[in-house]
Image 1 (cartoon, rainbow, N blue to C red):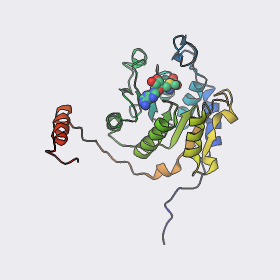
Image 2 (image 1 turned 180 degrees about the horizontal axis):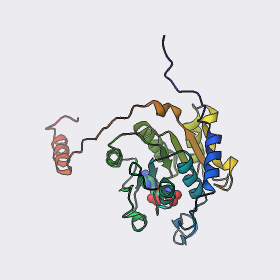
Image 3 (image 1 turned 90 degrees about the vertical axis):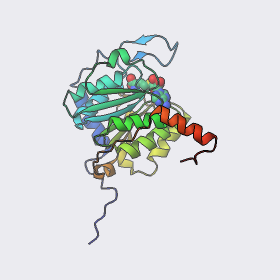
Image 4 (image 1 turned 45 degrees about the horizontal axis):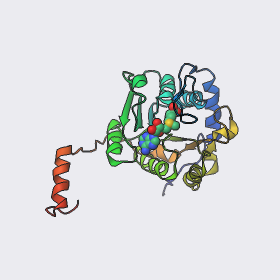
Length: 256
Ligand SMILES: C[S@@+](CC[C@H](N)C(=O)[O-])C[C@H]1O[C@@H](n2cnc3c(N)ncnc32)[C@H](O)[C@@H]1O
């Protein structure tokens, strides 16, 4: 008889339950020494030496959901990265790959085992390839944390390509109520999902994030079914690429 293989029921995947477990676990994790770094508001220059409110939640989520493999888009100073890392411990099979166009995290993250920082625009093919190769042993992660440009197109691109490619079982998106573009993004990425699998954590726990800013959590049980497979993306050398592009531009090669 044919077995249904589509999205599975929500048992164990209820976003509110996951958030409750995370917040409970968070109470036992101290992230008080992890500062946010240079602020993205006000004068954009001052440094915040205290954690962002959601750091503790991310640490609790990591601990309570046994998260080991994480991709973060928008590292900044690596505050959230370090909070997540603290809850990972140092198991040999854990990995955080974090992407940013800036190097502001360099002094905080360099030398930390299990953290790979990729400098680049997450929505470009080059950065995407490098990220996939950082997970070459298997394109499967536990958590995708999107905290990048806070605009509709780059965040939708990030959600679409990284969710499809890395099959996370959980996605967290910061600032889902920050502006109209982020509200539209949240509406778009949750529209076709059962309500129980998505949650603005700020509505349940305003200490995690102010409801006016929002903190989205999505559970993707369907990604639990995706087979694990080793896959290394072939990398073309920059010289070879230049020669090929030049040949195309003068018509010696068909675009391929
Ligand atoms: C709000 S900060 C991230 C804060 C950090 N996740 C934390 O919680 O401590 C947003 C970061 O996203 C980066 N960013 C914006 N657009 C990006 C893109 N397309 N690719 C990579 N990084 C991007 C910015 O440079 C900035 O450092």
